[in-house]
Image (tube, rainbow, N blue to C red; front, side, top):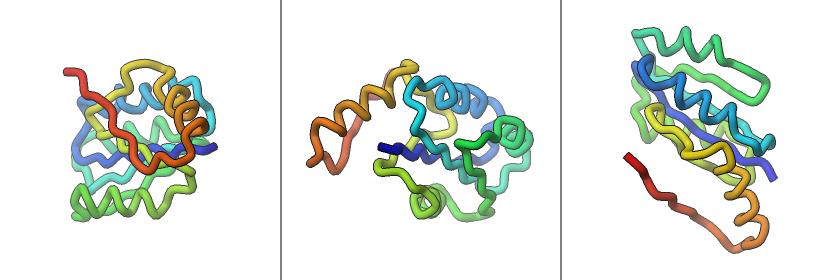
Amino acid sequence: MKISIITVTLNSEKTIRDTLNSVISQTYKKIEHIIVDGGSNDETIKILKKYKNNKSKFFIKKNFGIYKSINYGIKKSSGDYICILNSDDIFQSNNIIQNLAKIFSKNKKIDIFLGNVAY
């Protein structure tokens, strides 16, 4: 089962490295990371290009707004499940996606799954 992670960015140079590292360090390997940037004018795009790999797709969509960008990312995804991870968020551990995949494989009727936020 493939899981698509959608991240929307706009001028996120201070936080995007942590977000990207959080996805890269996941133990579950059937991940696709789709990043939609709203036309950043800081170092965000430069950072995203540096981190680009075969599991990530990067799109620049100026003036799309957050929700249109999320929907665009979903349309570009090929995963069985979609996860939204904001550009200033990280996964709590390297096993989060692995644990979600186990839950999804045991419970085929899950349509939506919400997680907690830790500050």
